[in-house]
Length: 426
Ligand code: DSN
Image (tube, rainbow, N blue to C red):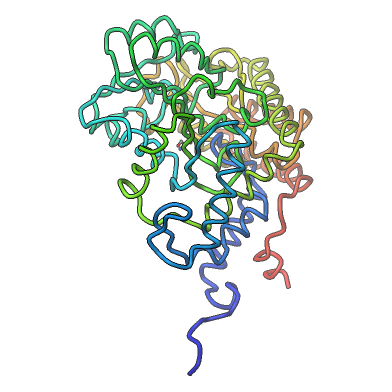
């Protein structure tokens, strides 16, 4: 009998998909990727993501699986767990969440009953859908209350305290998707203790900076910490939950499997292990330091060109530009930048009166271009190009001229020669 396994490489097996991937490869390499939640994984991370572990079912946890043949799935999951514990200095980690949203869902499933009160940052002020936003399960299954930022773009911790004292939530969520300033985990803990709440830190955006020692850690303050693995951590798409309390840990394990997920994505877990190994390299600190330095350069140049930077600058990997009070919308700015080969995203900003589909701001991140090796010089040139484009968002000729210029910069900072690309050239 013949084997039914097709062994052709993708370019032969499925030219249609292969060509789409090649196009995406070209887009990622030619454009300047400045979405604050994106990054470039190493080829090693991608190799593990595309590995044979994609075939394996491993419901349960290492040495307690519901299927046979899990020897190596156990090994790789334990390795990922031990590396992430070493990075953050925590006692427990669950590396199975398929995403950050799944991680947050599991924490709530572990620690809350339906209808319990939660307090998180308002989505329109920089929070995340899963921190209590109405269209998300978090705003539907629980009574969600929010805090936000003040006109100066900063969180006012006394206001958070005041809201928490009135609401008396069971969980306070700190962490954000669009907040450029340091999060004071110690302050949040103080407030949580005062009102008898559990403190959850969602460090999805800043985890890589915490790992590199350039943002304070939530460990020692937060009762439970969640993160994605694909933003500043530069790993495969996925999530992790961490804590130090064995009782919470036990509840979280059950909340991931079997409560909210089935079989773990073992190939993604293997890739998480690879990414965590990269973070344990002493070079990671340099990377994290440069991510912040580059974001500061970006903010400084844009401010010097007259643009309104929410909170006046940045402490992390992202810069929020506000167009409130002008004719420019986030949507128009996002499209104009995209025409010039710069990928960002429209974003709501404080005092925004426009809808989330339009918005009055853009969010720009430095993590991905820093991975490519770009530094102060390049970020100055890019920031000036962004300002030139925003100065006249309707000038499409200028957008094309800038695009050509930026593609030349991009060419000097290649990311990886993908196998697909190499094959297409032969
Ligand atoms: N969608 C992510 C971001 O862009 O920040 C958050 O999950």
